Length: 95
Image (tube, rainbow, N blue to C red; front, side):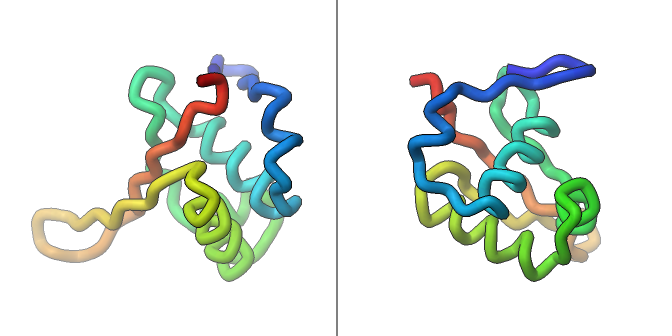
């Protein structure tokens, strides 16, 4: 659940055994997500800046989140074939 000025996470997030970097990146993804579709597409640069970590750490956190089944990363391309930011589909923790 999110709003323009805040977002909420269920307490269950603390029982998942996430590493601090995974928790921070997951929170950032939730912050950027669309409430109805549970997806977002922030760049790795944006995630790194907002989480105060480098891109390699973000990549590691994303791999951990995907391995735990908390999100799915899908590569995207522009019409000219160049890469753009990934799409991230989040798993609802409330269900």
